[in-house]
Image (cartoon, rainbow, N blue to C red; front, side, top):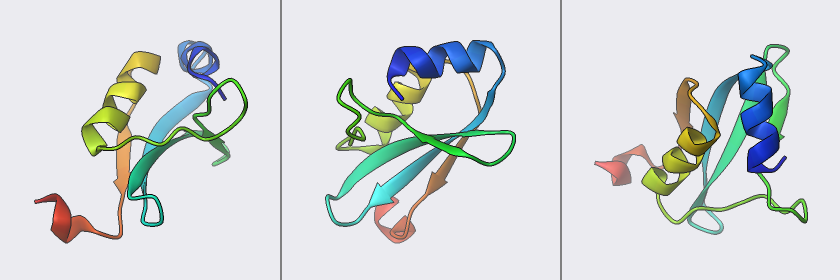
Length: 82
């Protein structure tokens, strides 16, 4: 789902949370939005490829571009984020 679709769904209160997931293979961060039923909607580019961000801050900024919603950080490497 592209950023504009996420923005629209957040305005309609369809999405309730953003999850920032650390991908240990690419060492990047991806953004998945969740609806009330628990369905995941990954943030993608116009070709449907999931976006990957170099830092947690960049991923958080992408969520804030879409709108305001609670953010949950899922990471296997919490010790490296200190």
